[in-house]
Length: 360
Image 1 (tube, helix red, strand yellow):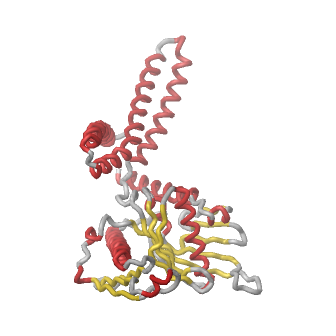
Image 2: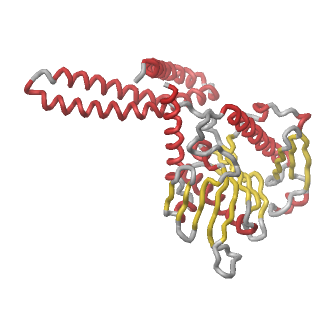
Image 3: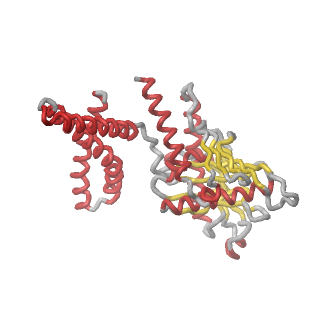
C-alpha cells in the first residue's frame, strides 16, 4: 500500500489508543454526551485498526516464511506459508481500501422516509402502502423504530402520501439509495378483466439534521398555520386545531403534521422534517455544482428517474441502476432488502475505488 495510506493507518492506531484512555476518563467523570461521541468514534476506528494489525501480522509471517526458504528441509513448507500470507495480505488490503473510502457524514443518522403515489391513481396509492410495509418490515429486522409523521390516506386503504421517521443507527446508510421512482406491474384489485397495469410511486430518503438551527431557518422566513386534523386520530385530534402546516417562504417547501394531539409536538415534528428537506435540497444543489463527468453507478438521485421495477406476475424485482434482477418478490415486499441494499452499497464503493484509482 502507498506510504500515505500506511501513515494514515498508523495515525488511526494511535488515535484508537488515545480513545481508550479518553473513554476510561469520561466513564469516570460521567460526561455522557462526550462518552457517547467518543464511543461512536471508537466503534468506527476499531475494525479498521484491527484489520491494520492483522495486515502487520501477515507481513511478519511473510518475512518469517521467506527466511525459511533458504533451508532445504523447510522449503516446501515455507513456500506454502508464503502463498497463504500473500493471499491473506491481499484480502486484508482490499478490505482496508473499502474501510478507508471517504465516509458520508450522514450515514449513521436516522432518516425521514417520504412515499408519494404517482401515476396510476388508486393502484399507485395501494402500492405506496405496500412500499411502506416493505420498509417498515426491513426496519424491524434492523432493530429500528418507525414513527409516522404525516399521512394522507386514499379511499381504498392506500396512501396518497406518507412521511415517517426511521430511528436507528445507520438507517440512512442502508436506505439512501432508495430515493427515486419505484414502478409496479401487476393486476390491480380494481381491475375486473385481469389486465396488468403499470403504476409508480416516488420515494425520498432524507437524513435527519442535527437540529433545526443546523440549517439556519430564519423564523421570519417561515409561516406556521394551524388547522383541524382530518382522518383517523380520535375525537380530540379531530375537534381541535392541533394540526400544523409550516411553509418555508424562500424555497416554497411546505410540511404538514397532524398525527399528534399536541400542536406543540406537531410543530416540532414539522420543523424537523422541514430542516431535513432544506438540508437535502442544499446537498443536491451542491452535488449538481460539483458533480464529476462520470455518472454514479447508483444513479443521480433524481426523483423522476425510474430506479426499480416490481413485476408481480413474473415474481421479479429489477434495480435498473445496477442491472440486478431478483426472483423473490414476496420476500422483498416482506422487508428482505439486504441483498438489494448490499448490492447498491457495493456498487457505490466500486465507483469510489475506481475514481480514486484514476486520481492516483
